[in-house]
Image (cartoon, rainbow, N blue to C red; front, side, top):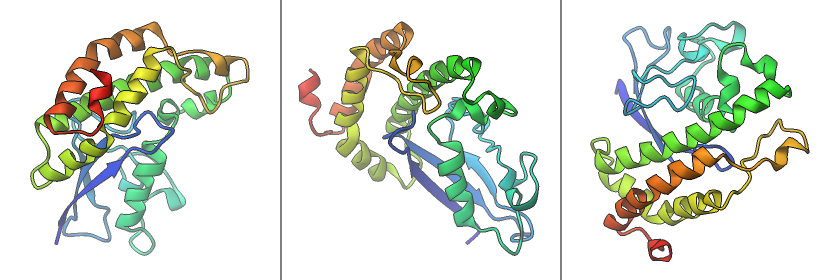
Length: 215
C-alpha cells in the first residue's frame, strides 16, 4: 500500500474545532529514505499558513520547509504517525498566525496579538466554508463518514456560531488579561450572519441532530 488517506478532526480550543481535514499521503519509491508526499484537500482555501490552496503542506518533516535535526525527515526515526501528529499539533493549532515564518518572534507582543485574533476569526470562517464544501463534495469513500460526523456535530457548530454572534470573546492564548476581554469583530459577526442560513440548510439536509433549535 503506497497511498493513504487521513482525516483529522479539528481540536477544541482552535479555530478548526468540529471541522474535518483530509490529507492524502503517497509513499514514494524511495520511502522511507524520503518522506511521504502529502496533499491537503483545500477546496482552494488558505486557512493556515502551512496549508496552501494548491494542497501543499509546508512542514519541515516533509522537507517542504527548512529545518534541522529532529525537525526534518529521518529514514531511521521518522514515521507516518509522526507526520500525522505534527500536522494535528503543529499546524492545526490554536494560534496558526504564529506559524508564519519568523512570526514566532511576535508571541506576547502587541503586534502579534493584534494580528493573531483576526487571523483566527478568518481561519474559523474558512473552516466553516470547508465544512460546506465537504458536505457538497466529500472525498470518495468517505461520503457517509462526513455526513455522520456533521449529523452529530452540526448543532455544536451552530451553537458556536450563535454564541459568537452575541459578541463572545475570541480567546488568544498569548493575550494579556486586559486584551483577553476583547470581543470578536463586527466583521466576523456579519460573516456568520450571512453564513448561518446555508449552514443550517446543509446540516438539516443530512438530518443533523438538534438543528431545529436554530430555526
